[in-house]
Image (cartoon, rainbow, N blue to C red; front, side, top):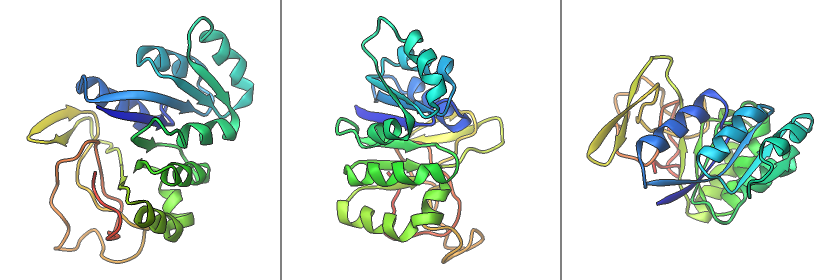
Length: 212
């Protein structure tokens, strides 16, 4: 069973990732979740998946989150420091970073430094720090897989020999800093491969960043 943290669990990619977890009982354990300010949904997710910890970036929503989780053993963290604490946990195997914008870069780096695999939908991480992140992937010997959600109502998630239906996910994995190397129309584009988490394509491939 892979231990999973999801940064941005209340967004579209985060919620779809939790749907994938639900569709694969016994294969993932959700350890920690984060959100920007959706306290109600974050609390519901944390209790449903029995997470150990949650972090909410907007401190003004922290009180509501704490109230909603009163009586539980779920740890509540706040601010960017809380998100970074979740990203760098040592009891997680895979960190899915679904944060939006430049704020997602530091958690990506924190997760890689902690030695965990990262599933990344936050393209700004690679735009802003692609060289540093690539070096971390090489040095730590971890996997970085890039994710995307399709606007289509459904897609296929490749999982071993099985195909699982899940809204908007596809498993064609390429990775690397955007705008470099081979384009999306290249005839050498890799075929879809089995993976533990839904993957997608954004651009050319870096040899040090591999499908999970």
